[in-house]
Length: 375
Image 1 (cartoon, one colour):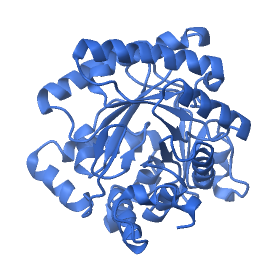
Image 2 (cartoon, helix red, strand yellow):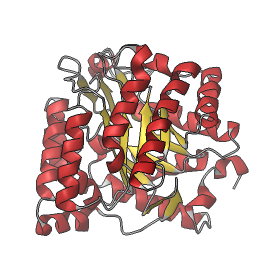
Image 3 (tube, one colour):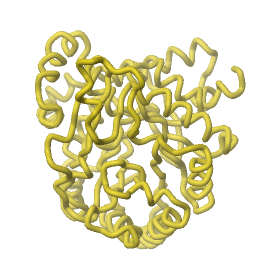
Image 4 (spheres, helix red, strand yellow):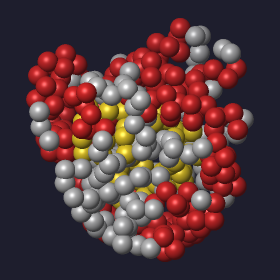
């Protein structure tokens, strides 16, 4: 939304309840793409002028920049994300059971720090209702023009020992609609969820999802869907090595680094103290360096052979470029759209294109992990 967003919309959003502002922004996006005239206007204003084609997980992407999970939990604005020129979109997290999430208020915004703290708790309509929603969308509009990723979470009522079946059930119900599935075992807002990052628990979830993947693939006569694991930025090095090795050795196709953090900035603006004392996961600019360092570690430990999706604190093309050079093959944003508006897509994609040209790269693959090679 560029200058108009900074001058008008951003101050208005800042005085609203964060969750209500988020909901209103989604409804506005849906409205703006509901007819050909305004949809074309949205694309004209916000779609990047450059394309950076890349292929990963056997899928073609117009560019490497996508919307992260949490922005569109209910699959409400699929045509909107297409119109903004994103390379892909991730919906969810979706759980087997419908759930309201944690009590409100549960989303808090620190404008000066460009940070969000949330304890949403996987509020979503549940996998059965999302399947109905996606079926209606596909029947009316056809398959989305960009890859659709679905983030899988565990229902709060499901015991940890039954988690594998919970994830697998959601995957089975939504299998035919997704291009990629993401196993989310790293949200800090579902009690004990991060316990599932441990080797045996994660292995059981992956194996259960693989069974569904193989059976649905045979049933529909199409290829297996890529499965990724989304991890916490709060892992220590030993935990990181263990979870990456578990994901790789059990047949996952890549990893997303990272989810929100339970840590807080060392220096906090006095006016924002109340935000950072809230319980929940923090996203945005303060997690930027942490996630980029994690990407770099994963790239090194896997010799660049395990695809990484980088997310955390991307507010500009420069931020995205740092994650690509650290080893990310694709990148995502959530908080960046809250603080920079819809023009973030254009800033990031055109910014990456500019950086590629400055460094003499003709393809994105040449840039991925370049900081490790001293390019």
